[in-house]
Length: 210
Length: 341
Image 1 (cartoon, each protein chain N blue to C red):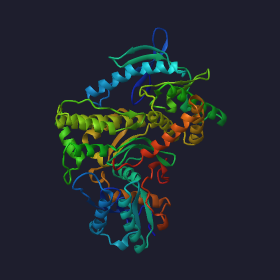
Image 2 (cartoon, each protein chain N blue to C red; image 1 turned 180 degrees about the vertical axis):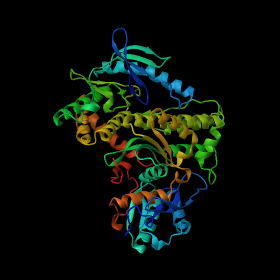
Image 3 (cartoon, one colour; image 1 turned 90 degrees about the vertical axis):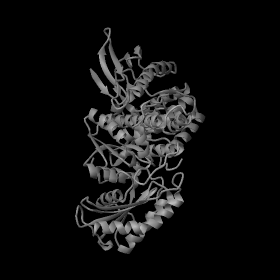
Image 4 (cartoon, rainbow over the protein chains, first blue to last red; image 1 turned 120 degrees about the vertical axis):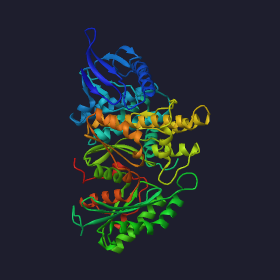
């Protein structure tokens, strides 16, 4: 059963060996020429389970991977029970909102400390489980890097996602995210990243000349 | 005083953000009566801001006269003057702003400073009838995916470095192509791309909803300079990669917002390959695909006039002492009370 048709992949909720699983299929995109399409799909399919595993090592909850089929651009993984942060963030108490934001920030910090850039930090890619864990899903655009630049971009995207989807609480939430982030990576690193985020926001502006 | 939605109230719009100087007369009920333009053509290299500003100052009189003449409207019939207040090149913006201020005070009519990006979106909506689209605004200076949420055009993705149009322009110049009047670099690359057959692998850089074109530009220039690929193949591959990136990001915004329309606007909207890619995703998400007509795609005065009318009708005007240009005015900093939503 199709549960989410994303831009990058479609998610199906399936029964697989008596287990409720998510089948992530990177379907061919008609708008892309086949050569480019196949390269993008198989690269992302091979890459994603790898980085999901690294995230677990970093102490960030991610779904369990059951099967990877690169040729078909298909991944079978655990169905994570819970609610998208996107659904809960605006409805919970302000205390809870800040606690969740801080927890999210801490998880992002752990990823970055281990050189993992998520690449698509939005509140629809985080699931709050009944056990009060925030599970990060969709590492389809993630990459490995120890550099400041992609970390800044990652957090810039998170900030952007908060502003576009949760504009009422975006400011306080992002502040809490950075607080949690600092708990994972330390104050000094956080200062550097914060400066980078500012620089990136400026750079995205009107650029007429190189 | 100008009346709302009236066919007998007119706005003069002045655009001077980058290499175009444009002036247009638009009626308050949304009819483009004239849309005059003159483009600065550098002998070599890109836009030199000061040289472009000098061009605008010299062209202003002729372009303004043409705008009034074609519209068959006398300057004293104008009820509102709108100008592009930013973002853009400082010297160019200031030239247009000076003309707008002078005209508004001479004619004793209100002045409205318009955000250039809002202009592109609003003229696209006016021309295509789109009401609440996900917009891909792709031009020489900007690459923005936006949609209206809670009073503003929110940015869902944008370039982290250079704009797509800039990428195509710099590539074309680097490989020795020439632009012609009526056929800018983008059109020249598009022509060559149609002859391309072999796909050359080039870096595809999408970061979440944001894009990066600088690595792609370098790799495309190097692919050609290596002598291993024809110019046609490189143009073809550059277009395929760059436009697939734009389409992926637009599709992600569309999936996220579930808007009913996809609007393509800005100078690069003229590219048929980009149009065809976006048409595919629009269809797959049951959205209507809208593309700004060619005559309104590049920078023009009509889009400034129309955005000015919309702002003015919702109570926004710009007193002369606050009409200084804002070279880094972000789309999402504009409160847009005229949009329903």
